[in-house]
Image 1 (tube, one colour):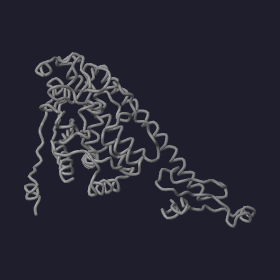
Image 2 (image 1 turned 60 degrees about the vertical axis):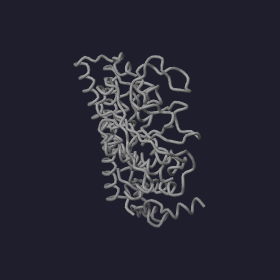
Image 3 (image 1 turned 90 degrees about the horizontal axis):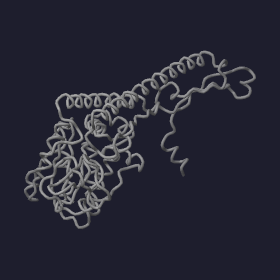
Image 4 (image 1 turned 90 degrees about the vertical axis):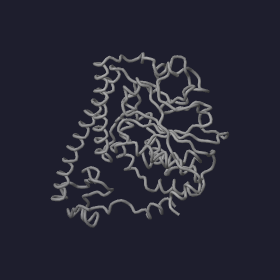
Length: 223
Length: 163
């Protein structure tokens, strides 16, 4: 059975949606973008094939990969973006570098269940920064914008300082562009539909974003 | 939502010249980051370089001209420091290679001297060691030679040690 027939059999074809970036933010950061995909699924233990794939990914990843990672175009692009938004990527790690560090410290990519394992596999394979949200709690399209005065992340103390770059839906910020997620916006036991979002920065090709989203979606769908 | 789209960015001036200046600084940051990454990789595993540049902000935000300049300057400083450390390391390795050649030519003049692969900038765990042939007898007779170690322990031997 070919892949198309398999997809048709499952009644599922992945198609990502493009979010928007506030114009004044886009003017500052050409190439910045957000795409997401929604998949039926609930969090839980990763099935054996996913755990096997995680282990295989661990086996292909060595210390030298981590050292030379910052020379590769996509990890480099995220490091540069982190610098440009005031973060030190050697303290606040880019998603792929954080995974690399965890891999070296733990001796392997440890399973953390779904959807985390699916995100780990896709992030390590593609370098793309991915986030998971509870799709039923996302209202309308996702976007990247700067925070307005008085806004905060749900369930977290204090207001966001004005101008903080956030991922938001049509109602409010759902998380920082990299880092914390609003308390009720992330994936929880109650989640039945998962939104996987990819933050694209200048220098990251769209095909890599599409591949990362497809990889997560297909892993979750197969589980 | 429309107000968020139409809202002017209050923290940043958006006139053309300043925006161009910020874009140029971001481009420079990208170039410097690439250079620092290359130096970091070049130094591994001989030298551990500090590539950290203090974060300007606790939260992600679009930086103004001054902040971007600070990041750019910090990166440039880090690169300068990294180049100096790499150059110093290269000079040390060159001196060690010269010393190794002298030791290989005249082991008796370099008694007990031990030079590792890392000392001359090579990978692996091996080393050259000036030792007397036949132990104390060689010491008394002046029979010195350079012994080359067999390199890194094999995984099986390491496992045996752990057991």
